[in-house]
Image 1 (cartoon, one colour):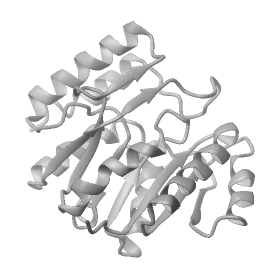
Image 2 (cartoon, rainbow, N blue to C red; image 1 turned 180 degrees about the vertical axis):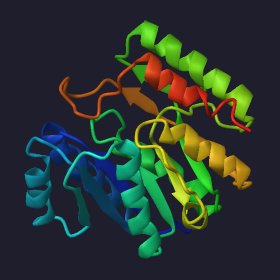
Image 3 (spheres, helix red, strand yellow; image 1 turned 135 degrees about the vertical axis):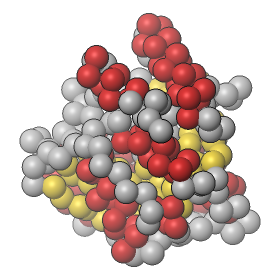
Length: 237
C-alpha cells in the first residue's frame, strides 16, 4: 500500500510537561512504520519552557520542525501556520494532533488507508463501534455526544465527531481551505468549508484519553461563548 508523505502538526501552548513524550512517541512510532513524515511543532507563544524543550528535541530528531509564534495567537492560527508549511513544502497530507497526551500515536496508522485512497478530509472519531472515551466525566461526555450528533444532522456529512482535533487533510483541499477562526471553532469551520468545496470525507476510530497533566495550556474551556461560536457553523448557509 502506498502511503503518502505527510506532516504531523502539533499546536502547542504551555505544553512543556508533555512536549517531550508527545514528540518522541510520535517519531518513534512513525519510524517503526517506515513512512515519510515530518513533525511540525507550532509553539503558540507559550509562557513556560515549551520552546526550549522543543529546541532540545530538535537537536536529536531531524524529523522535527519548530514554528514559533512570539505571542499567543490561538489554536486556529497555530494550525494555519502548520498548514502553510505543508502547502509551501508540497507535502501530501497534514495530520493534526493534540500535544497533551490524549491521542496515542498508534492511531496514526489507521489514517494510512484513507490517505492512500486520496480522501480529502479524514477525521478520528470517538463515536463508532471501536471508538472509546477514557477518563472523561460523564457530564462532559454527554454534552460532547449531543453537540456532535447535532453537527452531523446540520452539516450533513458522514462524520460523527466534529469537535476533536485529530484529523488529516489533503494538500489540494488545504490550498483552498481559507479559515479565519482563532480558536477551537476552527474545527467546525474546516468541515463547513470543506463541505462547500465538495470534499470527500472519511473517519477512523480512536480512543480519547484524559489529559496527562492538569495544567496543560491547551485545555478546552467549556463556556457559553465557545458553544455559540461552534453553533454558528451549524446554521450558516
